[in-house]
Length: 315
Length: 259
Image (tube, rainbow over all chains, first blue to last red; front, side, top):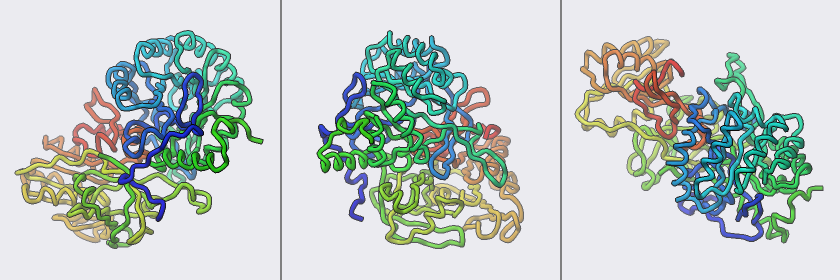
Protein backbone atom coordinates (compact mmCIF):
# COMPACT_ATOMS: atom_id res chain seq x y z
CA UNK A 1 0.00 0.00 0.00
CA UNK A 2 2.80 2.31 -0.92
CA UNK A 3 0.56 4.94 -2.46
CA UNK A 4 -1.74 5.35 0.48
CA UNK A 5 -2.46 8.96 1.26
CA UNK A 6 -4.67 10.40 3.91
CA UNK A 7 -5.42 13.55 5.78
CA UNK A 8 -2.42 12.92 8.01
CA UNK A 9 -0.38 13.92 4.98
CA UNK A 10 -2.67 16.39 3.26
CA UNK A 11 -1.73 16.20 -0.44
CA UNK A 12 0.04 19.33 -1.67
CA UNK A 13 0.67 20.72 -5.13
CA UNK A 14 3.83 22.70 -5.79
CA UNK A 15 3.91 25.45 -8.39
CA UNK A 16 5.10 24.30 -11.79
CA UNK A 17 5.39 26.46 -14.91
CA UNK A 18 4.59 23.45 -17.09
CA UNK A 19 1.08 23.42 -15.68
CA UNK A 20 0.25 27.05 -16.37
CA UNK A 21 -2.44 27.90 -18.86
CA UNK A 22 -4.75 30.73 -19.87
CA UNK A 23 -8.47 30.95 -19.78
CA UNK A 24 -9.31 34.04 -21.79
CA UNK A 25 -8.43 36.99 -19.61
CA UNK A 26 -7.20 35.02 -16.61
CA UNK A 27 -4.02 33.11 -16.03
CA UNK A 28 -4.33 29.76 -14.30
CA UNK A 29 -1.52 28.28 -12.22
CA UNK A 30 -2.83 24.82 -12.93
CA UNK A 31 -5.13 23.80 -15.78
CA UNK A 32 -7.58 22.27 -13.36
CA UNK A 33 -10.91 23.79 -12.41
CA UNK A 34 -14.08 22.35 -10.92
CA UNK A 35 -17.50 21.69 -12.40
CA UNK A 36 -20.09 24.05 -10.96
CA UNK A 37 -22.25 22.43 -8.30
CA UNK A 38 -19.93 19.54 -7.51
CA UNK A 39 -17.42 21.33 -5.37
CA UNK A 40 -17.21 23.82 -2.54
CA UNK A 41 -14.95 24.96 0.29
CA UNK A 42 -15.58 21.66 2.10
CA UNK A 43 -13.52 19.83 -0.52
CA UNK A 44 -10.50 21.97 0.25
CA UNK A 45 -10.28 20.31 3.68
CA UNK A 46 -9.00 17.24 1.84
CA UNK A 47 -5.95 18.79 0.13
CA UNK A 48 -3.99 21.89 -0.70
CA UNK A 49 -6.03 24.52 -2.56
CA UNK A 50 -3.02 25.33 -4.74
CA UNK A 51 -3.88 22.25 -6.82
CA UNK A 52 -6.75 24.19 -8.37
CA UNK A 53 -6.24 26.74 -11.12
CA UNK A 54 -9.70 28.25 -10.69
CA UNK A 55 -12.75 27.85 -8.49
CA UNK A 56 -16.24 27.86 -9.99
CA UNK A 57 -19.20 28.39 -7.65
CA UNK A 58 -22.46 26.52 -7.71
CA UNK A 59 -24.84 28.32 -10.08
CA UNK A 60 -26.75 31.16 -8.49
CA UNK A 61 -29.99 32.68 -9.66
CA UNK A 62 -31.58 36.04 -8.90
CA UNK A 63 -34.06 34.62 -6.41
CA UNK A 64 -33.50 31.65 -4.10
CA UNK A 65 -34.35 28.30 -5.67
CA UNK A 66 -35.62 25.35 -3.67
CA UNK A 67 -34.55 22.83 -6.24
CA UNK A 68 -36.20 19.63 -7.39
CA UNK A 69 -38.03 17.05 -5.26
CA UNK A 70 -36.07 13.98 -4.09
CA UNK A 71 -34.83 11.47 -5.07
CA UNK A 72 -32.37 13.67 -6.91
CA UNK A 73 -29.58 11.19 -7.48
CA UNK A 74 -29.03 7.79 -9.00
CA UNK A 75 -25.71 6.12 -9.68
CA UNK A 76 -25.96 4.28 -12.98
CA UNK A 77 -23.66 1.68 -14.49
CA UNK A 78 -20.98 4.19 -15.42
CA UNK A 79 -21.78 7.55 -13.92
CA UNK A 80 -24.30 9.56 -12.02
CA UNK A 81 -27.73 10.93 -12.82
CA UNK A 82 -28.72 14.06 -10.90
CA UNK A 83 -31.68 16.35 -10.74
CA UNK A 84 -30.80 19.03 -8.21
CA UNK A 85 -32.59 21.83 -10.03
CA UNK A 86 -30.15 24.65 -9.26
CA UNK A 87 -30.99 24.80 -5.54
CA UNK A 88 -29.28 27.97 -4.30
CA UNK A 89 -29.85 30.79 -1.82
CA UNK A 90 -30.19 33.50 -4.48
CA UNK A 91 -28.08 36.46 -5.49
CA UNK A 92 -28.55 38.56 -2.37
CA UNK A 93 -27.45 35.88 0.09
CA UNK A 94 -24.63 34.92 -2.24
CA UNK A 95 -23.26 38.46 -2.30
CA UNK A 96 -23.73 39.11 1.40
CA UNK A 97 -22.73 35.78 2.91
CA UNK A 98 -20.98 33.45 0.48
CA UNK A 99 -18.83 35.86 -1.46
CA UNK A 100 -16.98 37.29 1.57
CA UNK A 101 -16.19 33.74 2.65
CA UNK A 102 -14.85 32.83 -0.79
CA UNK A 103 -12.76 36.01 -0.87
CA UNK A 104 -11.30 35.21 2.54
CA UNK A 105 -10.55 31.56 1.89
CA UNK A 106 -9.60 31.28 -1.78
CA UNK A 107 -6.38 32.37 -3.41
CA UNK A 108 -7.10 31.17 -6.97
CA UNK A 109 -9.33 33.06 -9.44
CA UNK A 110 -13.00 32.87 -8.48
CA UNK A 111 -15.52 32.30 -11.25
CA UNK A 112 -19.16 32.90 -10.33
CA UNK A 113 -21.63 30.69 -12.17
CA UNK A 114 -25.11 32.11 -12.69
CA UNK A 115 -28.28 31.54 -14.64
CA UNK A 116 -31.50 33.37 -15.33
CA UNK A 117 -34.93 33.01 -16.84
CA UNK A 118 -34.77 36.15 -18.99
CA UNK A 119 -31.98 38.08 -20.66
CA UNK A 120 -32.77 41.02 -18.40
CA UNK A 121 -32.33 38.80 -15.35
CA UNK A 122 -28.92 37.60 -16.56
CA UNK A 123 -27.89 41.24 -17.06
CA UNK A 124 -29.16 42.26 -13.65
CA UNK A 125 -27.20 39.50 -11.90
CA UNK A 126 -24.06 40.42 -13.81
CA UNK A 127 -24.43 44.10 -12.92
CA UNK A 128 -24.81 43.26 -9.24
CA UNK A 129 -21.73 41.04 -9.34
CA UNK A 130 -19.73 43.66 -11.27
CA UNK A 131 -20.01 45.88 -8.21
CA UNK A 132 -18.32 43.20 -6.07
CA UNK A 133 -14.60 42.75 -5.53
CA UNK A 134 -12.77 39.46 -5.76
CA UNK A 135 -14.47 37.96 -8.79
CA UNK A 136 -12.23 37.00 -11.68
CA UNK A 137 -14.98 36.09 -14.06
CA UNK A 138 -18.34 34.53 -14.77
CA UNK A 139 -19.54 31.21 -16.00
CA UNK A 140 -22.84 31.73 -17.78
CA UNK A 141 -24.95 28.65 -17.24
CA UNK A 142 -27.16 28.27 -20.30
CA UNK A 143 -27.09 24.50 -20.11
CA UNK A 144 -28.66 23.11 -16.93
CA UNK A 145 -30.93 20.25 -18.02
CA UNK A 146 -32.86 20.17 -14.75
CA UNK A 147 -34.80 23.41 -14.80
CA UNK A 148 -37.48 24.48 -17.24
CA UNK A 149 -37.49 27.85 -18.98
CA UNK A 150 -34.16 28.74 -17.52
CA UNK A 151 -30.59 28.47 -18.71
CA UNK A 152 -30.86 25.71 -21.23
CA UNK A 153 -33.71 27.46 -22.99
CA UNK A 154 -31.02 29.92 -24.10
CA UNK A 155 -28.20 27.46 -24.63
CA UNK A 156 -29.75 25.39 -27.40
CA UNK A 157 -30.30 28.27 -29.82
CA UNK A 158 -27.30 30.04 -31.42
CA UNK A 159 -29.25 33.29 -31.84
CA UNK A 160 -30.24 33.36 -28.20
CA UNK A 161 -26.68 32.56 -27.13
CA UNK A 162 -25.46 35.43 -29.29
CA UNK A 163 -27.97 37.97 -27.95
CA UNK A 164 -27.40 37.03 -24.33
CA UNK A 165 -23.61 36.86 -24.52
CA UNK A 166 -23.46 40.11 -26.45
CA UNK A 167 -25.36 42.01 -23.76
CA UNK A 168 -23.27 40.48 -20.97
CA UNK A 169 -19.99 41.12 -22.79
CA UNK A 170 -20.85 44.83 -23.06
CA UNK A 171 -21.19 44.99 -19.29
CA UNK A 172 -17.96 43.40 -18.11
CA UNK A 173 -14.24 43.32 -18.67
CA UNK A 174 -13.91 40.23 -16.50
CA UNK A 175 -13.56 36.72 -17.86
CA UNK A 176 -16.79 35.72 -19.60
CA UNK A 177 -17.12 31.97 -19.99
CA UNK A 178 -20.27 30.48 -21.50
CA UNK A 179 -21.12 26.94 -20.41
CA UNK A 180 -22.59 24.89 -23.20
CA UNK A 181 -24.95 21.93 -23.27
CA UNK A 182 -24.26 18.65 -25.06
CA UNK A 183 -28.00 18.33 -25.70
CA UNK A 184 -27.81 20.22 -29.00
CA UNK A 185 -27.58 19.21 -32.63
CA UNK A 186 -24.64 21.44 -33.60
CA UNK A 187 -22.28 22.54 -30.87
CA UNK A 188 -19.99 24.33 -33.34
CA UNK A 189 -22.64 26.87 -34.31
CA UNK A 190 -23.41 27.61 -30.66
CA UNK A 191 -19.72 27.91 -29.78
CA UNK A 192 -19.24 30.31 -32.71
CA UNK A 193 -22.22 32.39 -31.66
CA UNK A 194 -20.81 32.78 -28.14
CA UNK A 195 -17.40 33.73 -29.48
CA UNK A 196 -18.78 36.22 -31.98
CA UNK A 197 -20.82 37.87 -29.23
CA UNK A 198 -17.79 38.44 -27.02
CA UNK A 199 -17.40 35.36 -24.82
CA UNK A 200 -13.75 35.07 -23.82
CA UNK A 201 -13.90 31.35 -23.11
CA UNK A 202 -16.25 28.38 -23.26
CA UNK A 203 -16.98 25.65 -20.74
CA UNK A 204 -18.31 22.32 -21.93
CA UNK A 205 -20.02 20.03 -21.43
CA UNK A 206 -22.86 20.27 -18.98
CA UNK A 207 -24.66 16.98 -18.27
CA UNK A 208 -26.42 14.89 -20.87
CA UNK A 209 -30.05 14.02 -20.41
CA UNK A 210 -30.18 10.70 -18.62
CA UNK A 211 -32.72 8.39 -17.06
CA UNK A 212 -32.93 5.22 -15.01
CA UNK A 213 -35.94 3.10 -14.08
CA UNK A 214 -36.28 0.35 -11.49
CA UNK A 215 -36.81 -2.64 -13.80
CA UNK A 216 -38.86 -4.54 -11.23
CA UNK A 217 -41.36 -1.81 -10.41
CA UNK A 218 -41.23 0.57 -13.35
CA UNK A 219 -40.57 3.45 -11.00
CA UNK A 220 -38.24 6.22 -12.14
CA UNK A 221 -35.10 6.39 -10.05
CA UNK A 222 -35.17 10.20 -10.21
CA UNK A 223 -38.34 11.92 -9.03
CA UNK A 224 -38.56 14.12 -12.12
CA UNK A 225 -37.90 11.16 -14.40
CA UNK A 226 -35.12 12.63 -16.50
CA UNK A 227 -31.99 14.12 -14.99
CA UNK A 228 -28.49 15.13 -16.03
CA UNK A 229 -26.04 12.30 -16.68
CA UNK A 230 -22.40 12.82 -15.74
CA UNK A 231 -19.32 10.79 -14.93
CA UNK A 232 -17.07 8.35 -16.70
CA UNK A 233 -19.77 7.16 -19.12
CA UNK A 234 -20.02 10.52 -20.86
CA UNK A 235 -16.30 10.99 -21.48
CA UNK A 236 -16.29 10.04 -25.18
CA UNK A 237 -19.20 12.40 -25.83
CA UNK A 238 -17.51 15.23 -23.96
CA UNK A 239 -14.25 14.63 -25.81
CA UNK A 240 -15.92 14.70 -29.22
CA UNK A 241 -17.80 17.90 -28.41
CA UNK A 242 -14.65 19.52 -27.02
CA UNK A 243 -12.86 18.63 -30.25
CA UNK A 244 -15.70 19.99 -32.41
CA UNK A 245 -15.93 23.22 -30.42
CA UNK A 246 -12.17 23.69 -30.41
CA UNK A 247 -12.14 23.32 -34.18
CA UNK A 248 -14.84 25.97 -34.47
CA UNK A 249 -13.48 28.75 -32.24
CA UNK A 250 -10.27 30.54 -31.24
CA UNK A 251 -11.24 31.28 -27.62
CA UNK A 252 -10.03 28.84 -24.96
CA UNK A 253 -12.16 25.96 -23.74
CA UNK A 254 -12.41 24.54 -20.27
CA UNK A 255 -13.52 20.98 -20.86
CA UNK A 256 -15.32 18.61 -18.55
CA UNK A 257 -17.37 15.44 -18.71
CA UNK A 258 -16.17 12.15 -17.25
CA UNK A 259 -12.61 13.23 -16.51
CA UNK A 260 -11.45 11.08 -13.58
CA UNK A 261 -7.65 11.05 -13.79
CA UNK A 262 -4.61 12.60 -15.49
CA UNK A 263 -4.83 10.38 -18.54
CA UNK A 264 -8.42 11.44 -19.14
CA UNK A 265 -7.25 15.04 -18.73
CA UNK A 266 -4.52 14.62 -21.33
CA UNK A 267 -7.04 13.43 -23.89
CA UNK A 268 -8.97 16.65 -23.47
CA UNK A 269 -5.87 18.81 -23.83
CA UNK A 270 -4.92 16.99 -27.03
CA UNK A 271 -8.50 17.53 -28.25
CA UNK A 272 -8.20 21.29 -27.78
CA UNK A 273 -9.06 22.15 -24.18
CA UNK A 274 -6.96 24.85 -22.50
CA UNK A 275 -8.13 23.78 -19.07
CA UNK A 276 -10.23 20.97 -17.66
CA UNK A 277 -12.64 20.61 -14.76
CA UNK A 278 -13.59 17.77 -12.46
CA UNK A 279 -17.17 17.16 -11.42
CA UNK A 280 -18.42 13.68 -10.61
CA UNK A 281 -14.79 12.63 -10.06
CA UNK A 282 -14.81 14.70 -6.88
CA UNK A 283 -17.54 12.42 -5.50
CA UNK A 284 -15.95 9.19 -6.62
CA UNK A 285 -12.46 10.10 -5.46
CA UNK A 286 -12.11 12.84 -2.85
CA UNK A 287 -8.43 13.15 -3.83
CA UNK A 288 -9.05 13.27 -7.59
CA UNK A 289 -7.81 16.87 -7.85
CA UNK A 290 -4.34 16.46 -6.28
CA UNK A 291 -3.82 13.03 -7.84
CA UNK A 292 -4.64 14.41 -11.28
CA UNK A 293 -2.25 17.33 -10.89
CA UNK A 294 0.56 15.10 -9.65
CA UNK A 295 0.07 12.63 -12.51
CA UNK A 296 -0.11 15.40 -15.07
CA UNK A 297 3.04 17.13 -13.78
CA UNK A 298 4.94 13.85 -13.82
CA UNK A 299 3.90 13.16 -17.42
CA UNK A 300 4.87 16.67 -18.59
CA UNK A 301 8.26 16.53 -16.89
CA UNK A 302 9.02 13.07 -18.26
CA UNK A 303 8.17 14.11 -21.81
CA UNK A 304 9.64 17.59 -21.56
CA UNK A 305 6.31 19.18 -22.44
CA UNK A 306 4.10 21.88 -21.04
CA UNK A 307 0.31 22.03 -21.17
CA UNK A 308 0.49 24.79 -23.77
CA UNK A 309 2.53 22.49 -26.06
CA UNK A 310 -0.20 19.92 -26.41
CA UNK A 311 -3.45 21.88 -26.53
CA UNK A 312 -5.31 20.90 -29.70
CA UNK A 313 -2.43 18.84 -31.09
CA UNK A 314 -4.18 15.49 -31.44
CA UNK A 315 -3.50 13.62 -34.64
CA UNK B 1 -14.44 18.34 10.96
CA UNK B 2 -15.34 16.13 8.03
CA UNK B 3 -12.23 14.83 6.32
CA UNK B 4 -10.97 12.07 4.07
CA UNK B 5 -9.27 9.03 5.60
CA UNK B 6 -7.80 5.73 4.59
CA UNK B 7 -7.81 3.19 7.38
CA UNK B 8 -7.18 -0.53 7.65
CA UNK B 9 -10.02 -2.69 8.89
CA UNK B 10 -9.05 -3.90 12.35
CA UNK B 11 -11.57 -6.70 12.55
CA UNK B 12 -14.83 -7.94 11.15
CA UNK B 13 -17.78 -9.60 12.83
CA UNK B 14 -20.54 -11.68 11.28
CA UNK B 15 -24.00 -11.10 12.69
CA UNK B 16 -26.09 -13.06 10.18
CA UNK B 17 -26.18 -13.84 6.47
CA UNK B 18 -26.88 -10.24 5.66
CA UNK B 19 -25.51 -8.20 8.62
CA UNK B 20 -21.86 -7.72 9.53
CA UNK B 21 -19.70 -5.22 11.43
CA UNK B 22 -16.47 -3.62 10.25
CA UNK B 23 -14.21 -2.16 12.95
CA UNK B 24 -11.46 0.38 12.52
CA UNK B 25 -9.20 1.68 15.27
CA UNK B 26 -8.35 5.36 15.50
CA UNK B 27 -8.30 7.23 18.81
CA UNK B 28 -8.18 10.74 17.40
CA UNK B 29 -10.96 10.05 14.91
CA UNK B 30 -13.11 8.41 17.56
CA UNK B 31 -12.93 11.53 19.70
CA UNK B 32 -14.45 13.58 16.87
CA UNK B 33 -17.53 11.38 16.46
CA UNK B 34 -21.00 11.85 17.95
CA UNK B 35 -24.00 9.48 17.99
CA UNK B 36 -26.10 9.92 14.86
CA UNK B 37 -23.18 10.96 12.70
CA UNK B 38 -22.08 8.83 9.79
CA UNK B 39 -19.18 8.20 7.45
CA UNK B 40 -19.26 7.77 3.72
CA UNK B 41 -17.28 4.59 3.26
CA UNK B 42 -16.06 2.39 0.44
CA UNK B 43 -13.51 -0.34 -0.14
CA UNK B 44 -10.24 1.29 -1.12
CA UNK B 45 -10.30 1.92 -4.87
CA UNK B 46 -7.62 3.44 -7.02
CA UNK B 47 -8.90 5.34 -10.01
CA UNK B 48 -5.72 4.65 -11.91
CA UNK B 49 -6.72 1.00 -11.96
CA UNK B 50 -10.21 1.67 -13.24
CA UNK B 51 -9.57 0.02 -16.57
CA UNK B 52 -7.15 -2.73 -15.65
CA UNK B 53 -9.46 -4.02 -12.95
CA UNK B 54 -12.61 -3.68 -15.07
CA UNK B 55 -14.20 -2.02 -12.07
CA UNK B 56 -15.53 1.48 -12.45
CA UNK B 57 -15.06 3.24 -9.11
CA UNK B 58 -18.39 3.90 -7.49
CA UNK B 59 -19.71 6.39 -5.01
CA UNK B 60 -19.14 6.03 -1.29
CA UNK B 61 -22.06 4.77 0.81
CA UNK B 62 -23.28 6.62 3.90
CA UNK B 63 -23.04 4.29 6.91
CA UNK B 64 -23.91 5.51 10.39
CA UNK B 65 -21.58 4.96 13.31
CA UNK B 66 -22.69 1.86 15.22
CA UNK B 67 -20.21 2.02 18.07
CA UNK B 68 -17.34 4.22 19.17
CA UNK B 69 -15.39 3.45 22.28
CA UNK B 70 -11.72 3.88 23.07
CA UNK B 71 -10.88 4.54 19.45
CA UNK B 72 -12.71 1.44 18.22
CA UNK B 73 -15.19 2.62 15.62
CA UNK B 74 -17.75 0.18 14.27
CA UNK B 75 -19.96 0.14 11.20
CA UNK B 76 -22.85 -2.31 11.29
CA UNK B 77 -23.82 -2.93 7.69
CA UNK B 78 -26.59 -4.78 5.88
CA UNK B 79 -25.99 -6.13 2.40
CA UNK B 80 -28.62 -4.32 0.36
CA UNK B 81 -26.95 -3.39 -2.91
CA UNK B 82 -23.73 -2.96 -4.84
CA UNK B 83 -21.99 -0.68 -2.36
CA UNK B 84 -22.74 -2.69 0.76
CA UNK B 85 -22.04 -5.97 -1.06
CA UNK B 86 -18.60 -4.62 -1.96
CA UNK B 87 -18.07 -3.71 1.69
CA UNK B 88 -19.14 -7.23 2.67
CA UNK B 89 -16.14 -8.72 0.84
CA UNK B 90 -13.67 -6.90 3.09
CA UNK B 91 -11.69 -8.59 5.83
CA UNK B 92 -9.27 -7.54 8.55
CA UNK B 93 -6.30 -5.70 7.07
CA UNK B 94 -8.16 -4.50 3.96
CA UNK B 95 -8.25 -0.76 3.43
CA UNK B 96 -11.33 1.35 3.78
CA UNK B 97 -11.78 4.86 2.42
CA UNK B 98 -13.82 7.13 4.67
CA UNK B 99 -15.23 10.63 4.46
CA UNK B 100 -16.48 11.89 7.80
CA UNK B 101 -17.50 12.13 10.52
CA UNK B 102 -20.42 13.80 8.77
CA UNK B 103 -23.78 15.20 9.78
CA UNK B 104 -25.20 16.75 12.93
CA UNK B 105 -25.90 13.80 15.23
CA UNK B 106 -28.60 13.33 17.87
CA UNK B 107 -29.08 15.86 20.66
CA UNK B 108 -27.81 14.37 23.94
CA UNK B 109 -30.10 14.77 26.94
CA UNK B 110 -30.40 13.86 30.62
CA UNK B 111 -33.23 12.90 33.01
CA UNK B 112 -35.70 12.02 30.28
CA UNK B 113 -38.05 9.13 29.66
CA UNK B 114 -36.99 8.03 26.23
CA UNK B 115 -38.44 5.70 23.61
CA UNK B 116 -36.22 4.35 20.83
CA UNK B 117 -38.00 3.07 17.74
CA UNK B 118 -35.87 1.39 15.10
CA UNK B 119 -36.56 -0.71 12.04
CA UNK B 120 -34.11 -3.07 10.34
CA UNK B 121 -30.88 -1.28 9.50
CA UNK B 122 -32.09 1.73 11.51
CA UNK B 123 -30.73 -0.06 14.57
CA UNK B 124 -26.98 0.86 14.50
CA UNK B 125 -27.07 4.64 15.17
CA UNK B 126 -29.40 4.08 18.13
CA UNK B 127 -26.99 1.55 19.61
CA UNK B 128 -24.28 4.21 19.74
CA UNK B 129 -26.78 6.77 21.07
CA UNK B 130 -27.99 4.37 23.75
CA UNK B 131 -24.45 3.98 25.10
CA UNK B 132 -24.19 7.74 25.53
CA UNK B 133 -27.62 8.18 27.11
CA UNK B 134 -28.09 5.11 29.25
CA UNK B 135 -26.51 6.42 32.47
CA UNK B 136 -28.53 9.61 32.50
CA UNK B 137 -31.96 8.63 31.20
CA UNK B 138 -34.60 5.91 31.18
CA UNK B 139 -34.67 4.24 27.79
CA UNK B 140 -37.15 1.77 26.34
CA UNK B 141 -36.17 0.36 22.97
CA UNK B 142 -38.61 -1.03 20.39
CA UNK B 143 -37.06 -2.67 17.36
CA UNK B 144 -38.75 -4.26 14.38
CA UNK B 145 -37.84 -6.09 11.19
CA UNK B 146 -39.22 -8.32 8.48
CA UNK B 147 -37.97 -11.50 10.05
CA UNK B 148 -35.88 -12.77 12.95
CA UNK B 149 -32.53 -12.15 11.26
CA UNK B 150 -33.36 -8.41 11.33
CA UNK B 151 -33.77 -8.43 15.11
CA UNK B 152 -31.09 -7.22 17.53
CA UNK B 153 -31.06 -6.70 21.32
CA UNK B 154 -33.86 -4.39 22.48
CA UNK B 155 -36.65 -4.22 25.07
CA UNK B 156 -39.40 -5.12 22.63
CA UNK B 157 -39.04 -6.92 19.32
CA UNK B 158 -41.48 -7.04 16.42
CA UNK B 159 -41.31 -9.07 13.22
CA UNK B 160 -43.61 -8.78 10.26
CA UNK B 161 -43.61 -12.55 9.78
CA UNK B 162 -43.96 -13.29 13.48
CA UNK B 163 -40.76 -15.36 13.58
CA UNK B 164 -39.50 -13.53 16.67
CA UNK B 165 -41.14 -11.28 19.27
CA UNK B 166 -44.49 -9.77 18.53
CA UNK B 167 -46.06 -10.25 15.10
CA UNK B 168 -46.64 -7.08 13.13
CA UNK B 169 -45.07 -3.69 12.52
CA UNK B 170 -43.11 -2.10 15.33
CA UNK B 171 -45.19 1.05 14.86
CA UNK B 172 -48.29 -0.79 16.13
CA UNK B 173 -46.93 -0.73 19.67
CA UNK B 174 -45.67 2.85 19.81
CA UNK B 175 -48.78 4.65 21.02
CA UNK B 176 -49.41 2.20 23.88
CA UNK B 177 -45.81 2.50 25.06
CA UNK B 178 -45.85 6.28 24.97
CA UNK B 179 -48.72 6.27 27.45
CA UNK B 180 -47.70 3.25 29.54
CA UNK B 181 -44.15 4.50 30.10
CA UNK B 182 -44.82 8.22 30.30
CA UNK B 183 -42.40 8.85 27.43
CA UNK B 184 -41.36 12.47 26.87
CA UNK B 185 -38.79 12.01 24.10
CA UNK B 186 -38.54 9.72 21.06
CA UNK B 187 -35.57 8.89 18.85
CA UNK B 188 -36.19 6.93 15.66
CA UNK B 189 -34.33 5.50 12.69
CA UNK B 190 -35.53 3.10 10.02
CA UNK B 191 -37.51 2.89 6.78
CA UNK B 192 -39.34 6.04 5.74
CA UNK B 193 -42.94 4.75 6.14
CA UNK B 194 -42.07 3.59 9.67
CA UNK B 195 -40.60 6.97 10.59
CA UNK B 196 -43.58 8.81 9.12
CA UNK B 197 -45.98 6.71 11.18
CA UNK B 198 -44.01 7.20 14.41
CA UNK B 199 -43.95 10.91 13.66
CA UNK B 200 -47.71 10.95 13.18
CA UNK B 201 -48.18 9.38 16.61
CA UNK B 202 -45.70 11.64 18.44
CA UNK B 203 -47.25 14.73 16.84
CA UNK B 204 -50.67 13.58 17.99
CA UNK B 205 -49.43 13.40 21.58
CA UNK B 206 -47.15 16.40 21.25
CA UNK B 207 -44.01 14.46 22.18
CA UNK B 208 -40.52 15.65 21.23
CA UNK B 209 -39.15 13.38 18.51
CA UNK B 210 -35.84 13.27 16.67
CA UNK B 211 -35.54 11.10 13.61
CA UNK B 212 -32.52 10.07 11.56
CA UNK B 213 -33.13 9.99 7.80
CA UNK B 214 -31.35 8.10 5.09
CA UNK B 215 -30.78 9.39 1.57
CA UNK B 216 -28.90 8.62 -1.61
CA UNK B 217 -25.72 10.71 -1.51
CA UNK B 218 -23.00 11.73 -3.94
CA UNK B 219 -20.61 13.96 -1.98
CA UNK B 220 -21.53 13.45 1.68
CA UNK B 221 -20.04 16.85 2.58
CA UNK B 222 -22.82 19.25 1.64
CA UNK B 223 -21.69 20.48 -1.74
CA UNK B 224 -23.89 18.61 -4.24
CA UNK B 225 -27.35 18.99 -2.66
CA UNK B 226 -28.25 15.53 -3.91
CA UNK B 227 -29.57 14.22 -0.58
CA UNK B 228 -31.99 17.07 0.15
CA UNK B 229 -35.27 16.47 1.98
CA UNK B 230 -38.13 18.94 2.64
CA UNK B 231 -37.88 20.36 6.17
CA UNK B 232 -39.93 23.10 7.82
CA UNK B 233 -43.58 23.93 8.32
CA UNK B 234 -46.33 23.18 5.85
CA UNK B 235 -46.34 26.82 4.81
CA UNK B 236 -42.61 27.39 4.80
CA UNK B 237 -40.10 24.65 4.10
CA UNK B 238 -36.77 24.20 2.39
CA UNK B 239 -34.79 21.33 0.97
CA UNK B 240 -32.14 20.65 3.60
CA UNK B 241 -29.24 18.27 3.14
CA UNK B 242 -29.36 14.94 4.99
CA UNK B 243 -25.54 14.94 4.97
CA UNK B 244 -25.09 18.41 6.44
CA UNK B 245 -28.15 19.78 8.29
CA UNK B 246 -29.16 16.13 8.99
CA UNK B 247 -29.26 13.22 9.14
CA UNK B 248 -31.12 13.94 12.39
CA UNK B 249 -34.16 16.20 12.11
CA UNK B 250 -37.04 17.14 14.37
CA UNK B 251 -39.71 14.71 13.18
CA UNK B 252 -42.44 17.36 13.21
CA UNK B 253 -40.42 19.44 10.74
CA UNK B 254 -40.01 16.69 8.15
CA UNK B 255 -42.58 17.16 5.37
CA UNK B 256 -43.35 13.43 5.26
CA UNK B 257 -46.20 13.92 2.79
CA UNK B 258 -43.67 15.12 0.19
CA UNK B 259 -41.27 12.21 0.57
